Length: 314
Image 1: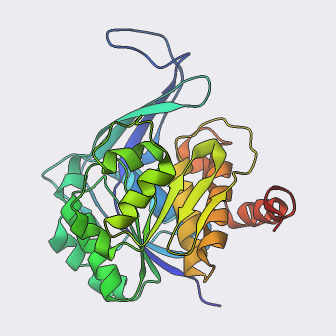
Image 2 (image 1 turned 135 degrees about the vertical axis):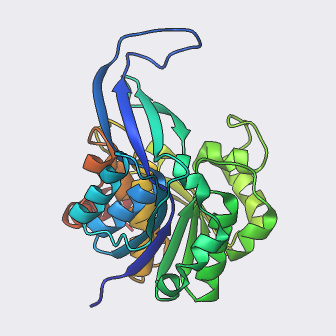
């Protein structure tokens, strides 16, 4: 059986991570521990994660020509990600992100996306041949909306399944949703997409239905420790999370989307794909750091099989 073919139109940024006893407030200085510097960016993470899960994955991304850019190319070479479409640009520095973790493994992140902001629809058009041969096309919002929208349009044009992971969230024109097969926000992203405060009290189910009225075919809301909510024309279903010992939640969303994409590309239905995504997202929380936490296929398959016996039990 051939490997599923996935194209990720996304981002690369170097992540600078530190632990602190709590998340700081304005003007506060505190001592931290466990400093780490390594590769990040949601598109990059998803290209690595889908490769580890057995896909033939290609990343379209923009990096700088500085020393940090070498962290990207070294990673893709080591992991087997196709980096033919990774472009080095002199105009902007490689993207960076500052991540603070508290003692519960929760985080906040500040990003300077740098060279990623040079991505545009024309750059995506240059990847059309690769997109045309893909089973799944994925994109995120760490790149300009015009580029993300074009990725979805080309994926739809060529019959690929399209996944928009709307992170970091922003309001989007409704037109983009017409080319999105699967929208995968978390609870705060879901609200921001609708122009609401991130902590709006209305139920995620109600708000996901509003997104579907705006043209999204299938909405999958990731709910952290609670699992994921699936809303389609036929389904209104909760998929429970698998129990794990949480160390760091930073890469959970990328791992979920990657597992979900690989499972769809392999032909699983949406419920099976979300379950596989939930497994991958849970496993990513058990390790410190995003790249170390992204699961290998054997680990994901083993955990999925166990969850079918215990957590889900159809």
